[in-house]
Amino acid sequence: MARSPRVIGRWIKRQMPKTLFGRSLLIIVLPVAIMQIAVTWVFFDAHWQTVTSRLSEGLAGDIAWAVESYQEDPSPAAFAKLSKRAEDSMGLSVALQPGRKLPVGRRYALFAPIDVSLQHALNERLDAPFWFDTTRYPAFVDVRVAVPGGVLRVLAPRERAFATQGHIFVLWMTVATVLLTAIAILFIRNQVRAIERLANAAEAFGRGGEVAQFKPHGAKEVRRAAAAFLDMRSRIQRHIDQRTTLLASVSHDLRTPLTRLKLALALNEPSKRNDAMKRDLAEMEHMIDEYLAFARGEGGEAVETVALRELIEQVSEGARRAGAKVSVTADPGLTASVRPNALKRALSNLIMNAAAHGERIEVAASVRHQGGVEIVVDDDGPGIPEAQYEEAFKAFGRLDEARNQNEKGVGLGLAIARDVARGHGGDITLSRSPLGGLRAVVRLPG
Image (cartoon, rainbow, N blue to C red; front, side, top):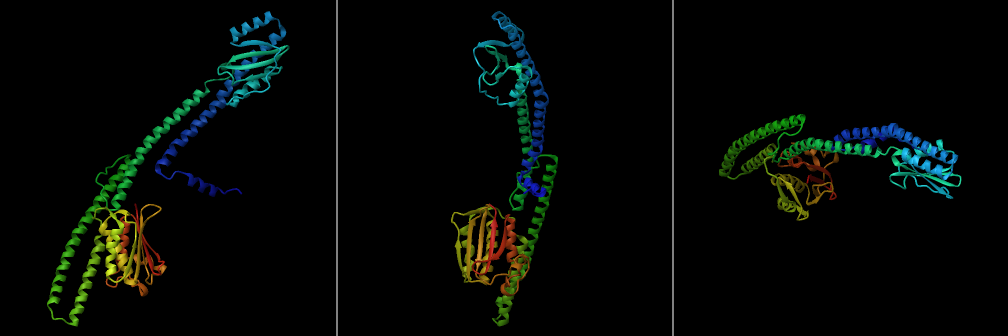
């Protein structure tokens, strides 16, 4: 069944290189290769074959002359004169083989047009049966013609039969193609390396890493993009510094009156009203902590290589103290390059959220097949409807009924956890847990 042009187009698209280096190389090398092949084809078709045909016709004419001269006077004296004249004037070695017959088999040349051209010329010039071999001797062509009483053998220089310099032309074309390809690879690689450095710097900055050694490099357009990236990084860093300073001031200013209120309540006489005010004050302090944590993030923390099992065990202690049964499955040697405090906060939000709605929690960490690591948090709580999975990640969002999350908070637990995961270059997804509740999957790059 014939394939449609659209299917063929998609297949060709899948076969194309995916990288900029591969595509640039294809754009440059493919036209050069096509041009070289076309030039070579035209050379052999319009020049080499024409020259070879003329040479073969000339050789066939000389051989026909020798055969006709011998047939006119087959005496030894006349043959000796013929042989000397052919040697001196035409460069042919003519020998008579009395009582011999033409060979039966023949070896063909690797390049077929050589034999075809000579076969056609001899057919045009000779009436007698003949045999020839272009492969036995590297420098000669062996032609034998049946004559009365035996065989007339003619050894002709190879350049008399066809043009022998064709392979040199092909060699030069091949060398030129390889040289042009090498130069193209060198220049393209230098340009692509500049783009790769820019991409690596942007990725490192997006994950909160340092980009101290990065400088604009490469073509003018790439330098402009790199300079724009550096300006953007400076503006973002300045904004982060200003926000950090502001949040430090806000934190100090808010905690000072909270501390005075807590002190005043501590000095009051115990009462139900006093206890209710203490609970309101604790909730207010918790809400302020949540707001500040969400706004501050963990962007300033350095990336470290940590053992995931140890980190998960530390985070799980809070859920165990809250009464949940937490089991951890992870290879003790499994490590990841992360910002430890940020990841602890993200996992703490997930595990404590699970502990608030379930009794049994399973946490597992493993290496992903696609690279990186994966941390799975399962619980046996009531779960969340699939339609509300993305809604659960929205800041300040609250889910009703089964999982009215963050009873003491403001709906920022999952939002902070996803923000931390994406800050590492990964993500968090939700699904139905085999335990019957919610499954949260944290995926981090390697």
